[in-house]
Amino acid sequence: MSIATLVGIAVALVVVALVLSAAIHVLPEYERGVILRLGRIQPLKGPGLIVIIPIVDRLTRVNLRTQTYDVPAQDIITRDNVTVRVNAVAYFNVIEPVRSVLSIDDYRFGTQQVAQTTLRSILGQTVLDDLLSKRDQINLQLQQVIDSVTDPWGVKVTIVEIKDVVLPETMRRAMAAQAEAERVRRAKVIHAMGEKEAATNLGDAAVVLEEHPAALQLRLLGTLLELGAERNSTIAFPIPMELLRLFDTSRKAAGDGAQQAPAGPRPAAA
Image (cartoon, one colour):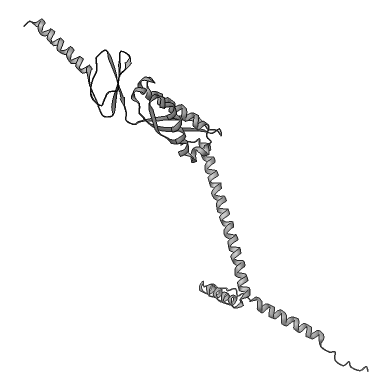
């Protein structure tokens, strides 16, 4: 056998190997094959072993697994004219492989661009307080809007989550001052409510003590015991009001008796 014949056989084997490698494909469980034969769509292939016609068929592998896209931080002006920097993450997957190939050139790039523009649009219509406190509602709105755009492409957006909201330094200081003022206000309100309840209870206690003088004496003795236990050098001894009233009544009675006493005989003139 001549050298030319050997070279020809080797070339033929290489060509056959290249053709077989181009014709035979193995698709894993999470992939599907979209085949265009001379420009016309063919039935969906996969998973497993598939055979295509080289040069005539064009195979596009489509990944059905959930994919994530980290939306870059966006500078957004909210509806109340506050500039914030927000980033998010989106989760999406292909549910219609044929549509993802025929309806858009690159469904990944298209989904990413829609996520960025929708994030700026939705948050630009939101006030800062809602952005900080109603995060779940905003996430749901973002998911619904993005999914409605990508649905014709056969792409399902499952989750959109806002990750970080970075506020300007001046706004952070203002919010900290507002929070501190709110805490001071609440403390004052609670203190005032406590004073009101204490005054009400003291009024009720005064009514009870007025109706039961013995209770007042017991309270007085309890106070003296508390003062004695504290080892004070000076003890303030309160005088019961009944005793003062008794002294006042005795003084008035003595004054009235002096005014009503009969005048004695006058001495005779010399």
